[in-house]
Image 1 (tube, rainbow, N blue to C red):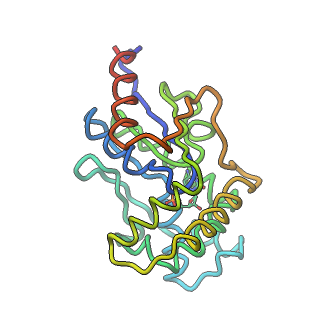
Image 2 (cartoon, helix red, strand yellow; image 1 turned 90 degrees about the vertical axis):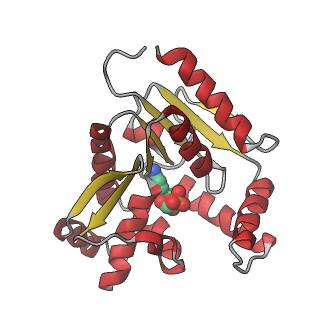
Length: 226
Ligand code: DC
């Protein structure tokens, strides 16, 4: 299958489906570059919050997009970026960003810009890219496409445990509600909604460990890539 072109593994799925951990580990095991596409939507949201731009005002968001300068680089096999020379770092995980990012991700003009930046990361080499529209929009021709899912209760339980382990306050029912709200927003938006990409293999990880999911993907890629 490998003919000298870049090999792309797209891993899509809803919030807290285990995508990030699985994608990172798959990239590590295969020696590929990892791209968290959500971090770009979060980066754009961070920039808006920082500059006091209302994310619901599409014209202002387009102006912000046009005046900000993004630079991409790879560090430890992970794609990172700066906006106007600044690395948003862990601030992309802040509550201010979390609350607004679904609105930013629903703006077609912002998606168009981010999709083109994401496609451009293929210049860094073979990729594992996680997101919501990787196999459907960003790289529909990707050689490997997966849609990682788990029952909402299990996803809420995992996210809750993650928060507790970071010593953050958490209530599992509230986490479930918030996940379901985000799923509905991400699946219901007009542009590039969360969906199972054509040709993607669906992996329901409700009763699987992270290691099992990773081993499954890695073995398929190794078997087919040569
Ligand atoms: O995966 P995440 O939680 O970091 O994603 C943040 C937001 O960006 C979330 O609302 C979904 C959206 N997103 C998207 O629309 N398309 C992607 N490829 C990745 C994320």
